[in-house]
Image (tube, rainbow, N blue to C red):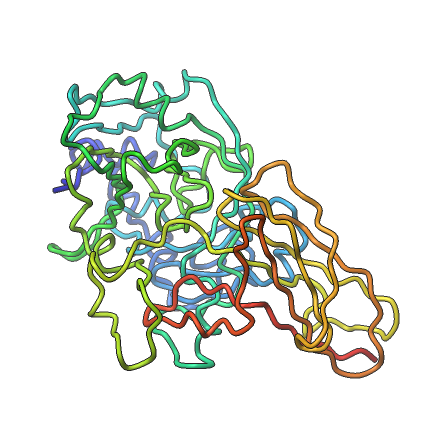
Length: 420
């Protein structure tokens, strides 16, 4: 079973010093407490430094998504407009996590243990001394698009539209290289690698956000222990100083504030692994399967992305003039197969045109697409469907994959515009 570390077992005074706030009392200053528990829906009052037009889903946790009007302006998503999804209120000794700046932490320990033959601890300094790699990859909440499932039945949780995603450049050390250099070695019985972070539930016996991956999962070959985001130290609210990044995997699998890597015989029993963030193995209808019914046998973790595409322009609120128009957006998948087709419809799906795809250097990044066309005066229903080289595509009716948790929406996007 995974064990929750209290960072490095330091005292309250030591923690405050390392976190760069002098003492724990300073971390709980009036300003920080206001940021962590703001009742106002003003995003910049909840998390300092974020754009004040972000859409707030949960002020206490600082959960917010990006308006598409902002998201479409940047090929690489700036930290000021990057969606935020944390699971525990950044209070008490976790107050340092409630900032869009890099945490003022000079040292950080990651314990590698469990069924490791030679358990050891690596430090932030160790990571910085190793060869660094960069990867541009989509980061996306598993609940991105959840609100659209409501066309069949509303799923509980934040009613995300398409703003729970970002296109980000991560920089760090390949996970496999770290494990090899640490020379820990898994025992023959080790089947899973479990990642744990420094965030924890405020409840004494609350569930801990721990994630497990099969030791032979090919996705781990591309995983990195990232220390930089968009060329700067990772902001605390996005998982700094060290975040496990697995390109092509939903955000919850990219453990923030990572401070433990454990080899184990079984995947973690944490509810966040065994109950939450899981996709049902079969199609279900509202009423026949509930959020309490998930288990290891009837569902699987939200690992790799489903293929998806989104229209960035024009949006419903844009002023569109009849005549020549460029419809554009982005498409992405888990990065394991090239996206070869993006089809766009101007009449709700009756007819389709092939968009031009501008492939990114990274298979894990957004692939930009565009279609130069003409819109006559009146109302038009725009739709888009992406397909990759192994035949994975999007359902025209996204509610066909309805599930009680509202995860992994990948229905063909729909935007209604009026040309004048």
